[in-house]
Each structure stands twice: as structure tokens, then as C-alpha cells.
Length: 320
Image (cartoon, rainbow, N blue to C red; front, side):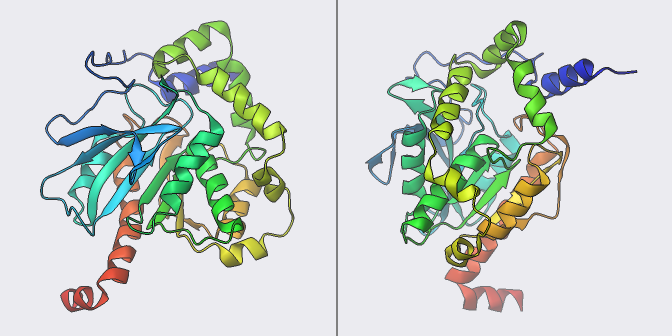
């Protein structure tokens, strides 16, 4: 019979792809994460619409035939590990670039004061606020695991301040909310902190900040931010009445968010379940090819809705 420890080890190895060696960082790069798509038009960005970013940098990838204006930029934001190899699959990014409505794809990575992989929560929320309120570009924001939590936190701040979110939509993959974890999620953290496992995980990340990030986030949460008080309320109807950003939730077959947390997303954020689930358990997406078409379809639903809003007459004519 397989023991619980063996199951946890199996989940961890699958999650991290521990048998694979991270690619080395380019010597010419000032940033931790290398550019993957050398054949495309790519560059590092440290601003959003000219405003300096505080908690991220971006890898911008676009194709020459993508619409420079009027198209939708897609920002893909990593989970807490933010591994040096990237958090999302090549086929997913290439599929987004193939979409006629997408102007560019921006891979976000954590960086604070020159430290790649370092999560400063206030700086992260600052950057997400810029993206959530960008009336000109109206980006599509795709988060995974930890970044689904920070996106929700930033969205709560925007709506609570009386602002209307200006995004094409949000896709939350493996959604997470502090205090609403499943038993599996709670069991994994102490296992990750064993010395042998710590070293393997840090090698996977390619930066030394993962566990310090976790401790600082816990301290911030313990300090009682507004989002924590919001989650502890029993009635979300008033907030939901003002939250009009379109949100889709994509779950793994075995995921880390409890039933109460899933219901909260739907009640408070007016979130909709994507009809497909990613096979297997909550884990890294970089080499999980089964996830790529599922995520592309989730994004396409937002992009098609945005196109209908912009060009309803022409699209109706084409469909007829």
C-alpha cells in the first residue's frame, strides 16, 4: 500500500519536474528569466504604459502581423514559485500570439529592487492595480495559484475604491485564497520545508526567495489587510453588485481550494466556472501540455466577447 509520504513525494516531483535541469540565465540579461521566443519580437519591460513597475518585470512577445493598436495585450502571471524556466507552456503562449485579437503577450515575473523572484506584496498590488485600471489597453490577465490571490486582492481594492475595472477579463488557474485551502494544500507546505526538499525546490525556482516570500506574505496577512476582512464577511452581495470584470475559473481535477473558497469566488466576484478541468492535481503548467488548449479556450471566451463589444456589426455579418 502507498503511504501518505510516498503520495506527497509523488505529487511534489510531478509538481516541480525535479528531474529536469533549469536552463541557465543568459549572460547578457539583467533579469533572472531568459527570453524564450528568440524568433519573435521580444524585449524586457519594466513599465506598464510608461509607469514604472515596482514588483514585476515583463517579457513582451509580439509578432509583426499582430495588431499593434486595438488588439488586446495578455498578461500571464506566475504562481509563487516563479521558476526560471517560466510558468506557462510554450504552446499556450504561441496560441495566444496566433489569436487575431491579441496584440502581445507579457510574461510577468516577480522582481523588487533588482531581486528576481522576490515578492514584495505592496509592490505587486501596485502593478496589478495599473493593469486592472488601464482604460486604454484593457488587458486580459491570466493568473496561476498565488497570482490568482493577488489579482483578487487588487481587484477588491479597485472595486472598493469605487473604480470600474478596465480589463478584457481574468482567467484564474488553480485559484487560491488564504484561509480556504484543502487538506492537501495544508499538508504540502511542511513537506516542502524539509531541508532536502527545500534545496530541490530552490534549484527548481532558480532564485533563493521562495520561503522568505511565503513568510513575509504570512506576516502581511496576519497584519489584517482589508482583503482579509472582506473574506471574513458573511455577505458579499454589495461587493458583487459592483464587480463587473468578467472572471473565469479553471481548476485542476485535484486542486487546492476548498469548496467554501470556490463558492466564495462565485458569490463575491461573479466568477464563472470554465467547463473543462485540467487533468491531474494542481501543479506547474510549463510542461503540462494537456493544459495548453484548455487555457487557450478559456482566454478565447474573453477575447471573443471583447471583440463583439468592439465590432458587433461586423462580427454579426461574418457569422451570418
